[in-house]
Image 1 (cartoon, rainbow, N blue to C red):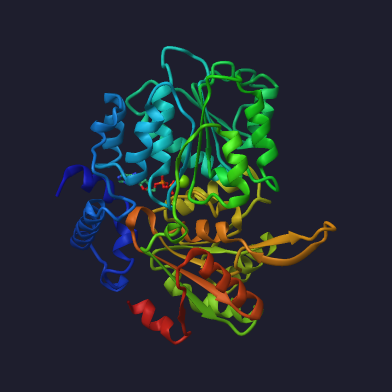
Image 2: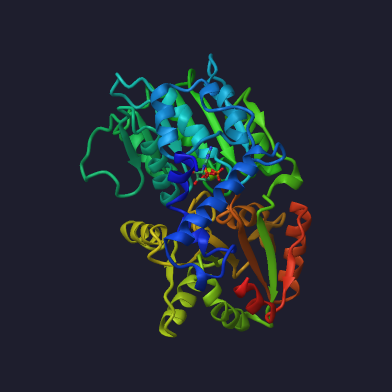
Length: 452
Ligand code: ADP
Ligand code: MG
């Protein structure tokens, strides 16, 4: 087996060995790990050789014009070939003069490397000045992106800093790091207070860009950051798996004359995520069903999404009292607690994470092989008088939530809990918007699924 492929897969092997190929009971010692990592690397190689796969590439990283120190970083991370989005986006992103980019590709297909390599390629390491900014919708995602910057930049002298809540020591007066990654509120604050000097910024990246530009959400703050940057000479890079119509126009204004890479509607989700739904009798029955799923949830790792923080807390408390080990994470927890919860989940110390939309986007944990939509994601529509009317499904959030599994070609399962006419109708709308069938599983089939 190739050394680098091996190096890449070995950390993921424990989760994957318990995933589907073999029943968990059989997954014992080293032989099993070797076998499963071998199987997975074959799968990846096959997918990267299939022109229809989003992981396919005709080129090598060498052919994309990257600096030797960055190539070292890439191979050190265990990547052997670019994915489709990397192959298509990088030459456009790295060409001169710099051109803006609006890039779309499915969850788990390697968008981060495309923009991180661009930031690192454009930075002048001899200058101690901030030159690249990256914004993400959550601190968890900002921290993850930073870990990629650090890993890819391992053989460069890059200096980095966070712009997330509580990240700088109190009274810090100056940040000179070349790459700053953060969330929009804190970034705005630090630039305003002149802690970050943006006069030399030449790359501005929005990950989860449709979310970052949403007028009902982070759009205002993101625009504020952009308006403080130099008027010219900043390359604006927007990436997401989804760009719904209502943000496309704004995105095109935000990143004028951009190169565009777009997905067709039926390509929004990847086929390696198998989507299911489960009939529940009512709201209370959902809880019982979740508890009965517990064994299944802990074979690998799983994320349970709820619509509200209090639901996440309530379920987590109840399950804990009943002797199950689960963690819960949402935006009402303080920064240090959020960091330690996501870190222990990432390290596999927690198997089941009950959460809200706060981590619906971007989080990349290879061992997550199951996502449960305890509540389907909803949006509230406002009518002409400004009153909230009927809820409708939040298609984009659904796509991102299920995308927490099935990373870079791995297999994953998502299960929706459907418990009344309303949720049923919402699920049908999701099916038609994504063009993908969601398969029913009966409660009896669960035992069968578990043994599979
Ligand atoms: P996206 O942002 O498109 O959802 P990520 O950038 O988070 O996806 O990448 C998903 C996973 O794929 C990560 O674990 C990343 O390390 C891995 N990955 C990305 N590019 C490659 C590559 N060329 N070869 C192997 N693995 C890759
Ligand atoms: Mg991403």
